[in-house]
Length: 351
Image 1 (cartoon, rainbow, N blue to C red):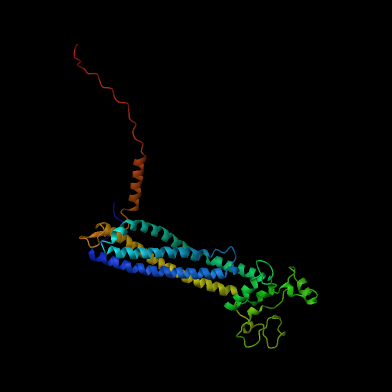
Image 2 (image 1 turned 90 degrees about the vertical axis):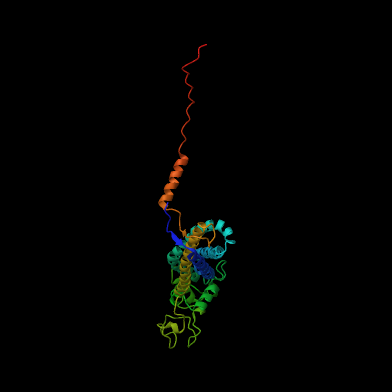
């Protein structure tokens, strides 16, 4: 059968291939380590922001798969560095010669599948992140007032920390707080007519005001922060409601978090592309080096010219051979007939 992509490898090219493969393997180890760091950092960020993500959001699958990809690529790089270094010494290569073939198969199948899966997730999951943040932030704002409700008692603290740390207000802007009750009911006086009127003015029975929590205030504002009656043009002296960014954070938390997480995911995607390119080169180099040394009995400085190749034969020939061998193995053996009786001898001696 004809070899697939054969490459003639005399002595000097074999040595240069082993040396270059050693360098590529360490570059792969470095790239995979950076991939592990990027995926771990993204996973930690998603864990911290889990309160503001919908439970149905599958974006956390991306860093988890990327962690597995980085681990497999790191193992491939270390194996490639060890095998290429050992191939330069005839005394050190025999142990690698026995295990290099299975390692190449495992690295190609497992690593390649994980890398393709991670790249597919990097392209497909940003949409789910947008929806997950939209739903998660809305739920967190709705539970902002539930400081005494089990399961939601930390929603206020977490949302205040989020707005202060990321310099954002509301889901898409400060007016989002006008549509939710963010003041706890224990601070409302049921005997106050204004409170009663506000609760009865909407079908959901919520106490809605045109104000925002203190965490929306910009500490760099040139004037004291205004938190209430923001929709009334003449409620505050020299306050223009068309320019709230002088007192409040201008951006919504949805856009800020989406940009932050997409930037981390983009960095992780770039590292995955670099990793898959380096891993492909390392696996190809290891395969050519392995097949070239097999023709020389595992000695890189053996005399003569040898060939490296990817597969010993074409895919069609391999399948045909396997089919024919399977047909021969499953072909029923011919039934054995009864032994023929010996024919009577013609010239019987007379008694």
